[in-house]
Structures are given as C-alpha cells and as structure tokens.
Image 1 (cartoon, rainbow, N blue to C red):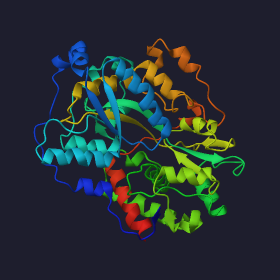
Image 2 (image 1 turned 90 degrees about the vertical axis):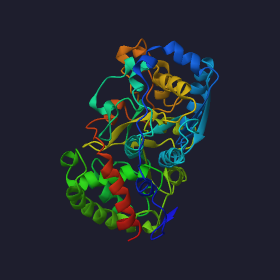
Image 3 (image 1 turned 135 degrees about the vertical axis):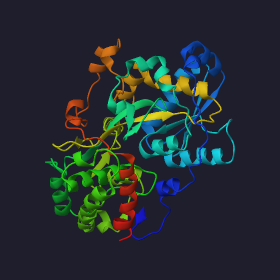
Image 4 (image 1 turned 30 degrees about the vertical axis):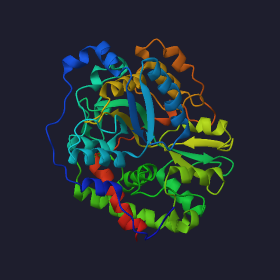
Length: 409
C-alpha cells in the first residue's frame, strides 16, 4: 500500500532524467530478414529471456505453457523473467552506458507507451524487423498499430495484444452500474469506502489509466489533447483533475489515506469483498477469474457510454540482445492465428483481444465461436466509442502530477 505523503522514488521520472546519450541506432538489414529459414536456423538452441510484467497468473500460464511449448518445437527455450517495463528499459540503458553492446541480459521485452518512447529515443531497440515476421501478414496496417501512444513504431516493436480499459463490479452490490464518469464519481461519494484505485508513480499502469480517464472527463473530452504534449493544455485539464480526485478521496477505501500499490492489491480487495469495484485493462481475464472462484459469480463489467481508453501493446528486442533470432521467433509465434485465438479464450487463455484480423486467416469461424462468459462484455459493447491514448508526455506528466497534487497533498 502507498500512504498519503509518503516519499518514494518516481520510476518514470527517474528514467527520463537519465542520460540519453546515443550511439548510431542499430538496424537489422532487410535482406537479412527476408530469409526466415536462416532466422529459424540461427534461433535453434537459443534461450530467449523475455522480461515482462508478470502480475497476471493467466498471462503467465499462457506464456509458460502454450508460447514456451511452441518455441520449444522450433528449438528455442523461452524463459519468462518477471519485471516492469520502466525497470527493464533502465536495465538495458545501464548496459549501454557500461559499454555492453552485445550479449545483453534482455532478449525480449513487453512494452508500449512512454517506455517505448524512452527506449526508442535512447536507441535501445533493434528496428526494421517487425514488419518482416511471417505472421505479420495478418496484422491490419492502421495508424493505431503503427503509432504507439503517438510515437511512430517504425519496425522497432511487434504488436501482441490490444487492450480496452473496463470497470469490474459485483452486481449484487451495484445493481445499476454508472454509465458515465460523472455518474461514477457520484456513486463513489454515495458509497463511501467501496471504491479505490492503485497508486500512480509505481510501475503499475492501472491507476494511471483510471486517472487519465478522469483527466478526459475534467477536460470535457480528449480531442483537443491529441497530438504533441501541450503544457498549457495539460495544466488546465490537470488542475481540474486534481480537484476532482482530492474531492472524492475522503470517500475512497480507508478514507483515501492509503492506496493499493498495484492492481493485484486492488483485485484482492475486490475478491475479499472490501470494495465493490475493481478495474482492468484486460477485460477478457475476468471470465477466467470468475470460473476459478477468485471473483464472485455476480461479477460483471461496464464501460461508459462515452467509451473508455484503449491501446495496443507490443514486444521489442533490445539492441544488445544476446539471442535476437530467438526473440524474433517468439514474436512471430505471438502473432500466429493459433496463438491469438487461444489468447482470446477467457478460460483457456486470458481473454486478450487480438491484434490480427481473423478474416485474413483460416480460423475466422473458430474465433467467432469463442464463448463470451456472462461476466465479460461482448467485444462490440466493450469497444464502443473507444478513446485513444494520448502522446506519452501526457502520461508522464499525469503520473508525476498525481504524486505531487494528490498523494503528497
């Protein structure tokens, strides 16, 4: 738990304050990528250290089971290494500053948003490889895929999943869920102690997306915040945001005197019945949590009529990765129709929405036939009026601002 006025080190601010001294950006030649058989041959016998957020047991099981098994069939050993993206990027940057330009400890990283921007600006990633993966043919080429929180991808990362923010609630305690942010704020005040959100300024991203949702509401929408970071616009919108968040704080769990450290702590509060709502950027996982008896059977999801925030997430290869060919093989497995199909299954996988177009595959009927548990919103309902993420500068400013203006107030 994080308690108000507690002093702690802000992860991303610390990262961004590090020297971004650069060397020439490493690039994999397109001619080298064209021969996939050569990549497979080079990858055989390699062990890929995939450093990734590991706060979801269903995701961990999917990676350690299905993905690792498919990699093994191609002679590649997959080693999942738990970690958070800001710390992983900092690790690679530290190796670069120490002159370790090959044989790096990180082969693959789960990444997006401000962490991707930081890594790309510091020339920490292999580029010009992702579009050449065989299974890339199933990914629709859209602005949403090719721009990560406003930063052009340019082949420096390969898409893995799409995500949509949703609220999760116990329908036995909340018969009629809010349909707008304004209604949610009213519900919080009318039901003291039954809602909270994870602290920002940690490596967890869940609280951050909730506060950005409040920022959109305080600003009257997101449209005029799109594009490059604008300090004046942020100052105006964030001032209203801090006022709203400080206003609801006395009505939060434990009177807002302490916040969950991360989504895992938030989910535990919900599972134990201490709060009536939790939240997720992976709504499909809820079906499995209900099936496993972790969440009550009365669990349901809701999004606002005006939509919630959605984005895509990716995997990237550090410039000094010791096993780059193996990392490419794993990234291609993640994009395969079979892997994307299983991942979408809320019980056998973890319910994540695909980044491929199943209409381009032979598994369209199987995808359409995936059952949707009663606890999970159908994808059309979930993604209605989906709101885009802002340029990563807004995320960094929001997280730092929340610490200063809410937590330490």
